[in-house]
Structure formats: C-alpha cells, structure tokens
Length: 185
Image (cartoon, rainbow, N blue to C red):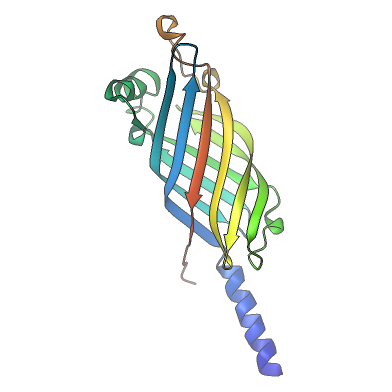
C-alpha cells in the first residue's frame, strides 16, 4: 500500500512539472473584408507556449512570414503598412483566466478566456479573447481563438486612396497543435 502511495505522489509530481506545452507551427490567419476587396493572409510558423501551472501563454510570429494570394499584396503589406523591417514580429503575452478549469486528466474541449498584451507594429495594447483548449491523452493537444482588432489602435495607417480596399478592422484567427515541452529539472 505504501508503494502505491509513493508511486501516486511521484506521478502527481511529474504532472506538476510537465505542464508546459509548445508549438512552432501555430497558424495565424487575418482577414480584411472591405467593400471593394477581401484580403487574407496566413502564417503557419508562429511559436507559442502555454504554461498550464501558471496560466501563462505566449505567441510570436514573424510578419514577413504571412503568405498572400498575390505577391504584390505581400509586398505592400510588409513595406507600406506593417513596416516589417522596422517591426519584424508581433507578440502576445497573457494569461488564461482560469487555468485550473483545464483538467489534463479528462479529455475534452475547455472554453477559456485569455487576456494579455498584443504587440503589433511597435504598439502594445490589452486584449481579451475567448477560445478553446483541447485536451487529449493527458496533454494539451490544441488551442484556437478569434479576435478583431482596429488597425488604428496599432498605428497602422491606411491611405485614403485604398480606403475602400482595406477594412479599418481585421479579424484574426489563431490555431496551434501543441506538444509537451520537456524541461530538465
């Protein structure tokens, strides 16, 4: 009986140390739907980490990694709007509001609210978004969320000449498949 208790304590302590999950293939898609044109771009190489024990979540994405339907859109996006040589990445640093509600011992989809700081174009603003975290086989398998931001909040200027082609707000969808981050003690 004593050995079973010791084994249970060892397994529980292992779970406590193994609550960091990561992905280097997070997918971020943004969509601008304006009266004259729909613009969509995707980046599938975002890095993200979730520390379930603290609720901390971070994302980072290189701006030049966004892929567009037309190469000219990508060029204008990087040079004229995002100034990606000056501001090469966007980041999010925040917290899951109730990380204790995500149970690694029970497979399922857990709704979450994440709040934190989103930095784009050198400007950091507080954001809050609803999302889902999926648990499978004792680990975070994936996460997803959607939010809408105003370009003006991040000092991204839209010239009047193309004002009908680019929306003043952009819808952002994020999704990542996670792996356990093995951290040596």
